[in-house]
Amino acid sequence: MKLNNETVTIELKNGTVVHGTITGVDISMNTHLKTVKLTLKGKNPVTLDHLSVRGNNIRYYILPDSLNLETLLVEDTPRGNLWGVGADAVVAVVGAGGAELCQQ
Image (tube, helix red, strand yellow):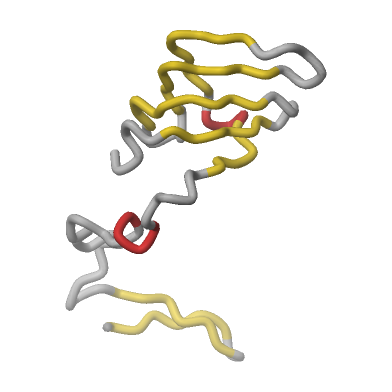
């Protein structure tokens, strides 16, 4: 939730532009905003108190220039073992002769 309380502009795939302050973003990139200005393509802007945008409708975010991306892109928490690959993992190796199983 590093972007909470940041004011961003979001362009949607249908050309709509949303400008507001982020209150939350979930794992599906669904974005919840407050103090929103919604501009449908070719229409006058509409002001809303709150708006939620489904993640798959978002083309891109326009972040404020004052945002320090170097600090935001650093991982806060260690991830751990994502693939379940440990010391005793078996890995398939594909070569010219086909697939072989190798003990790693």
